[in-house]
Amino acid sequence: MEPVDLALVLAVDVSASVDYDEFALMIGGLSAAFLAPGVIAAVAGGRLGAVAVAALFWSEGAEVALEWTRLAGAEDGAQIAEALLAAPRLPRAGATALGEGLVAALALLGRCPARAARLVVDVSGDGAGNRGRPSGPVRDAAVAAGVVINGLAVVNEEPGLLVHYAAEVIGGPGSFAMDCADYSDFAEAIGRKLVRELRGPGMDIA
Image 1 (cartoon, rainbow, N blue to C red):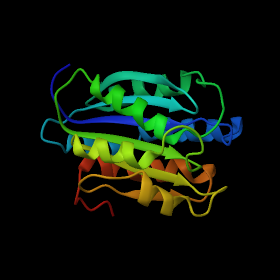
Image 2: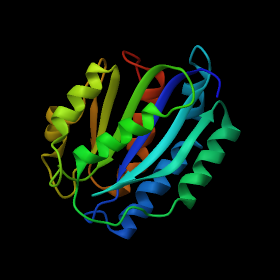
Image 3: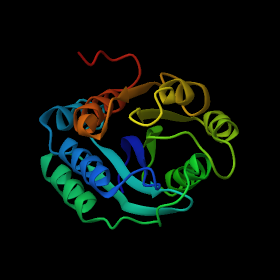
Image 4: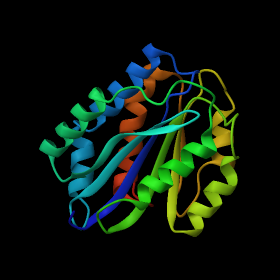
């Protein structure tokens, strides 16, 4: 794969707290984001005009939902959108092993076939970690390796989740956490989040 402006791993919570209707809203929203003109324009605005994207579903385990794909225009965005919609809900719904999900996302990032100017993990979920290793030390190791971790907290079940994400999940230059009230708001929120990630630190998303 040719060099890109950004290598981005989407790390998506599919634990037991995410029911099947919520999963459908989340994946539908994520898929729709890659069809959005604003997202495609943000990709085109980079120095190379291309990014590499992969996706991971995590619970107590983790499974790759989208292998590394180059995104350099609307046709690529449509391919990614279709692949996300078709991805099976794996692994088995279980506890929220947030730290383990981050480890798997970092391993996937390390396998990116393209040289990238920036390395980002985009975590989305509706709960704090309750199984496996804590996320904070994993985050710290990632930041030390030059990775930025951003978060989207769905706060319908845990109103304080944004604070937890800010303290224990996100890290690196320009890192940020956003929240949305429920999965019905996920599509709009993930679209804004992707544009901000694609444009890079310090860019106005208004």
